[in-house]
Length: 513
Ligand SMILES: [Zn+2]
Image: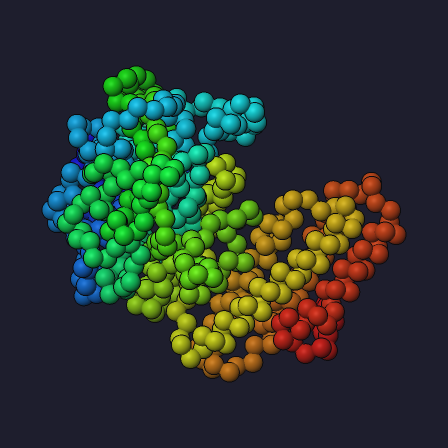
């Protein structure tokens, strides 16, 4: 099976579910609407596979060419012709180099294919018998299509997996942010993918070694050569000098070989399709490629640490809420693709964010969210940044007040924070939108009314959550007087001068309705 010619990608076409080969993504006849895998992490991985493939085959993409294909997508024949020079890197089970698998024959631990899945209980979880949430060994046999996606998903998200089991180029479970547009003409998969492929001029100074030639395929696809292993004290480390920048799309931190010699037949435990060849095991060995150094991925937001190294952001408990909106959509931290398309297209779009929240090697949760993306004119950027900081800081402050008052009444539960962010999210994005509109007309416009609306909303939601939690959760435990006091304290904070100051509103309180 070759992943450039095989029809292995589950999609939704205008006529319904189907499988396509990568070169068919832009088909005009019965167009492809979306990826349609059976798991959310598979959808996220396949999208990145296709974006990475397009970006890799068009390393010198010009803006003019980008616009042409935005207006008129390439034909399947055209795409096939462009993809085929990479055919050798996408063999999956043939003799010789295999996609995302170690170049040399491995002798190592034999594992069940279930361990390829990040949310399946690991060995330690099984030993401790703590796999309450994900049923143990629910995936024992998978078809070649699903094993290719599982392998790719693991390599690009690879969490720490014990001694010498290396993490992905973005660490374990990175946050990926993609530009999406919701206008009618860009409802097709092609449009969404193409928005996340950017002209070469937009990614100057990438990490990795830019002097390496992309035609040296082994520098882009590490499975085409013996693995640069990273045993302790061997001194053999894989700093980014050894890799072409586009290896960010094709990182291979784990040394893995699927066992194609001992397959079984039956039903694939992931897609449910009957198949004569199902993979049950793989062999793995530690000390694979160790991606040291500063790696900046085009599809992820990064912060800079004190040594000016790029640190990719990761989803945190509670989800990808508006608390992270600035980091994802506005600040220098945003992904290069997001920044490039905001500046090139100068229009309102959306950002789709997703990723695993990892607790070391254990997946706590898979998160996804969609948030607005704006082009902010340079002349209003400073004012806009300062306002969004005030909006978010005031929400953080009010959440603190709520937290302490709930702690005091013993009514705090772990989901309180997520609930607060969720309940205030719709209004936040409305406020944000209004702010952009007003400032775009007049950079020094008075936005006190917007701030006031935001504050009143936060105050009401905080009191509502307090009342719900104290009444429903722990009513029988509370002494009424104690409860009344805690509520009074919360109100005092919510309507006090400090919170108004955080929004740069004047001290004079507008009594709440
Ligand atoms: Zn399958």
